[in-house]
Length: 270
Image (cartoon, rainbow, N blue to C red):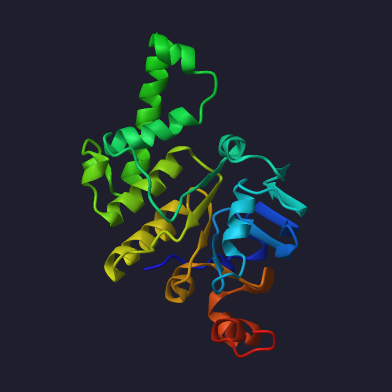
């Protein structure tokens, strides 16, 4: 069962804004992929980014994640302006993401996959790692402890020493989320985490995200499954032709003509 919606919180207990997208636009040559998109994501909030194919979801997601620099507008992580920063710098500031296609170090254990994620996010450790200094060994032990905690959060700790190649898709996707969580992000971007999973697997995935993950950080997920968005998300942000056409409680989407037209293709300009 999904936890109580963020919308039930009283105004006095409203969490701080963790992500702020301000009037962001993105052009590729003469094509406007995003136009004047603004949204806020609060601490502890689970927000679904939805829309029909070609709506601009992936472009916005990648712009927030540092893959693309916006053509105009600003993006803030907490109080810090992160506009145009590359992905590796964003990772050190507390922004983590997963991808729809899971890529793991198949020859390594489940635990070592999560620990390696922490290793990649540290700077200036090459020489100490090469020499296997005491400081490096102690630090790596701390990384493994954090990685194991992330695995336990997603009920993967019993598989810690199993090779990653042995995991079925559902557990591999959970491991991808655990790898991101091991870096202790402030904001987690999930790209269709339930894609390709059975109904039971997707329910388990989303139960864990809603009940455990969003207690650690704000979460934005790209999702096509409206059932998942309605059941689990505090808010839904709907894009169409690169513009935001809805931002509110997921249950209200069915009452919004622009959203219905965007999905059914019956509205003006559809």
